[in-house]
Image 1: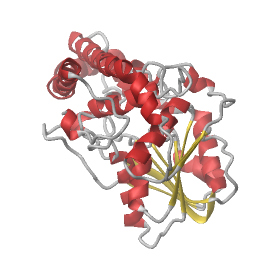
Image 2: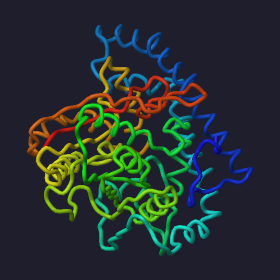
Image 3: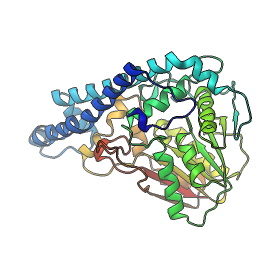
Image 4: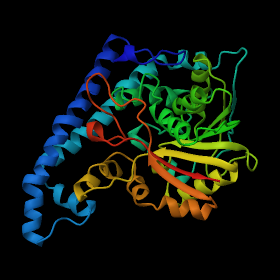
Length: 381
C-alpha cells in the first residue's frame, strides 16, 4: 500500500512495524466498509424496517427515524464501533510514525533555497469556534493545531492518514477530489483559461496541486487556517515541482482584492463548516471572483433515496467528529448562492478521475464501495 503513495520530501516513511500496523488498519477498514456494512443494510431490511412498519403502519419518514430504530441493534452497534475504532487506529498508527520522524520532517520543510511558490503565515489569525471545538475526523488536534515553531505534524499525519482512510482510492497523491473538480470545469467550461485560481481550505494542498496540473498557466493560491498544515503543504508542493502560493487565512473573509480570481474552489470544505460559515464562504467566493468567474466547491453529495440511504452517510455527523455533515446535506446551496449575488447556480456529479483501488473498493464521498461521485456545488459570478 505504501509503495503506491508517491514519495516526496516531507512524507513520513514508516518502518516495518509501522507499515504493518497501517496495513492492518487499511484492510480492517475495507472489511468494515464492505462485508460488515452490507450486513447493516440486511438487518434494516429484514428486521428493523418490518418492525417499524408494523408498529407505525408506515415506513420511516427520514434518516433520523431510521437512526433511532437502528441504534438498539447489535449489528449496527458493532459496525459503528468498528468503524470508529478504525478511525482511531488509523491516526494512532500514522501518528506514531510521524512523531518518530518529526524533527527530521520539520528540518526538511524549512530547508532554505530558491522556491517556486510562497508561504505566508499569520500568527494572529483566530481559529473559528466551530473548528476549534472539535478534532475533525477524530484527527488529533484537527487540521489547524500548531504545536511548536516550524511544526508540520498536522500536515504529515493528514497526508498519510488520508491515504489510509480512502484505502488508496484518492490516488497516489490524494488528489482525486481536486482533480474531479478541475475535470468538471474543463468539461463544462471548455473555453475557460483562468489566470488565477484559489483553493479554499487547502490543508496540505493535495487538491490544490490537481488544479495546478489542470491549468498549468494559472497562478494558483491555497489558503487554510492551520500553520502546520500550510508549512507542510508548501514543502510538499515544492518537492513535487509545483508553484503554489499558500497563505494562512479564513475562507469566510480573505485579504485578496475584489474580483481577483477566475476560479474559487474547495475540496470537502463545506461539510466541515457551520451553517453561517457556509453562507459567508459563498459570499466571499462571489466577492473574489471576476465577472464571469466560476465557483466550484466539491463535496459529498446531498444524498437522494430512501431514508436508509440518507441514514448511512449521516453516521459521520454523530460518530466521526463531523457535526456539520448532516446540516450541509440539508442546506439549500442554490438559495445561498443566489443570496450571495451569483448570476447562475449549477451543480452535478464530478467526472470520475480515480474511483477504485486494486482491492476493488471504490472510495466516493466517504461512503465506501457504494458511494456516489464527488458533487460540484458551483455558480457563475
